[in-house]
Length: 366
Image (cartoon, rainbow, N blue to C red; front, side, top):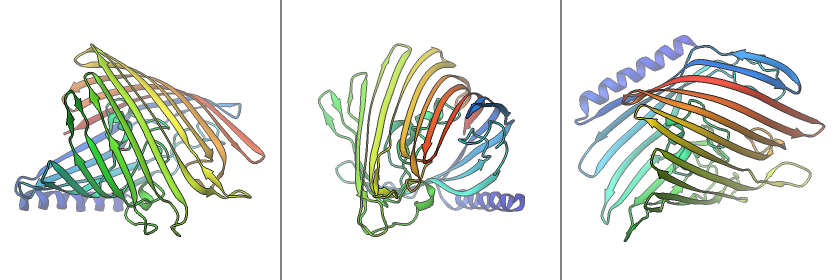
């Protein structure tokens, strides 16, 4: 495993050097996420336990961009991700799953697009486009606020969307109202990196995303529609909406999202998967170098886990006070304290998971 990781880093390093040397105007950067302290304490099905995960490199994302001409540019963002499996899980005593499944991965992509400037202020991006389905995940706002994303945002059935396709963007202005508008034609895979590069049917997913701005108020609304199954038979609908407001050193943001995957749960009669969730965040910037946060996160699945083929039901409620301390431009310490109350129902078995988790992390972008 170590040799595979070293080889991947070496190949990527060679690619960066080659990219920088042969491409005029190329820009190379990276984002590094490191866990400095991670402690959990709580109970799983009434059995108490605790877990200390220790210091670890969690993510590294490379930024490779270049302007090929005045109207064409390239943006590549390959990601190295370390999965430890140490997060509290249903059915496991807290601490039992410490450091299991350590898996360095260097085959994920956050973004890889060719962008073309078109007439009438249109921009077209083709490739792995990272759709703006929600603000928290699609525009990566949670990266600036939390070291660990919530169950709403980092969820391929709620706040997150990973797709290959085409993005069209046009800024629209109406007097005092700004209306950035995005139209997508997408792969339409079931979700996540697993189905990122290939289409599973011949019907693309169509998505419209708008972000009206009126003074200090911002809004977003999104609707996506397509087919989810290989036989091009069953519909998939996803939606989200949100609002944000700033006043002085205070700011607030909230979003909700849901969807319907027609007849995707294999019970006696095929049932629709209908996940739903929301979050609300309140911030106070008490200094140029510090910001405090309070985050309420709610997610509910009428299936188990993050695949609709597992019948059951789950509910996640998490309250997170947090603090962001800026060390330098692009670098910050993030502290969060998760207070979690999670429940899982399935045939002949119910699970409960209640825990507190203190995480201290470092994010740096350069």
